[in-house]
Amino acid sequence: MGLYRTLTDRLDHALSRFLPEKRLFLRSDDGTRFFRFTPLGQAVAWAGSVLFVSWAIIATAILLMDSIGSGNIRERAEREQRLYEERLQMLAAERDARAAEARAAQERFNLALAQVSEMQAALLASEDRRRELETGIDVIQATLRRTMKERDAARGSLEEILAEARAERAEEEEEEASAPATPLIADAELRSTIGFLTAALETTAAERDRMAASAAEAEEFARAMIFEQRLREERNDQIFRQLEDAVSISLEPLDKMFRASGMSVESILEQVRKGYSGQGGPLEPLVLSAMNESPPDPDVIRANMILDQIDRLNLYRIAADKLPFSTPVRASYRLSSPFGPRGGRLHKGMDMAAPLGTPIHATADGVVIKAGWSSGYGRLITIRHEFGIETRYAHLSAIYVREGQRVSRGDKIGAMGSSGRSTGSHLHYEIRVNGKAINAMTYIKAGRNVF
Image (cartoon, rainbow, N blue to C red; front, top):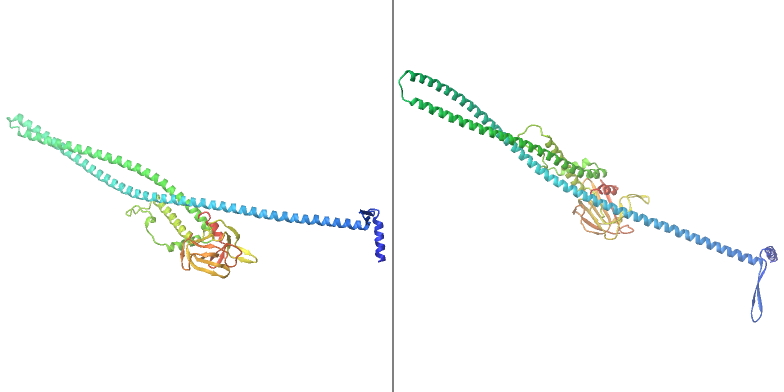
């Protein structure tokens, strides 16, 4: 106790130079009281005040920094979400534009196909008319040659008859001069013969003139047909160019889509071709004449090439319905978890978050092999497609199909939910090829420019 008192006195004495002792007087009716503040008490009070103010400043600063940091993170997350939604809207608009272009290309293709059919009919009719014209010209030329030969023969016969008639006339004149007058019967017969020959000659000359006029008309008609044929060839060339452009425009996005899927394009088309191997109809190779054994002309080769491209386009169209190129959620959604590692495990699908009850659509033609509850998947729909492909739609709130049912691309098969092992309303979408899970976004991106 004495040591404590001594230490306190020494501290008071040391601090008295900086903090002299102060007294606080309180006066009342009964008397006057005072409180004494020693240097040590003042020092303790000042130290406590400084510590309290420092603690208040530091705590306020920490709270402000936490508030500012959390606000920045929230604003950045909201900004990224807005950018993501804007990007989704842009992609949806681009998808609609590509779909409109695809429909326009299909319309142009149908129009061009109708023009090809008309052109083929016109070519066949033109070929028939050309053959009839050639046959008519040959007949006219043969008739003209025969008529000219007959005319030359008649002219030669007439000259011989006239020569004989003149010789006989001269002999008769000599006989008349030396003999007495005889009846004029021979002279009348001679004039009759000469008149008949003259009439025959005039008839032959008129027929020759008619045949020459017919030949001239036939030549003029042939020249007109040749000119018309040239115009038709130019028009056909223009139609061919339009068809080639339309087919190329239609095939280009499909080629890109199938190559982007990562599967063998030729293998897919070959399988489709085997399943649809019937032949006939408007896609038969173009042959103008069965009697023509000469090599086909360039137009025939060109038309057959276009028909081959149209056949490839049809195969693409059939295969596109059998592969999951479209998206299962056509409303606005957020990609909450992509394909790949998640929490140390492989996430075999992609999670597409949207409000509860959002419609879910089949992404390709196929057969439903599972429609019910499946442990962690919750309500699950599994569809088997062609080429060993399978799609899964999990965590649904409702199922609109049954097992064994055949569905087409775009059919509504269920509604989004949060069943099974789920933290909120979303769709878990998987694509498996021969039992192996692959990134479904590969197919969705590949089909984005077509569907």
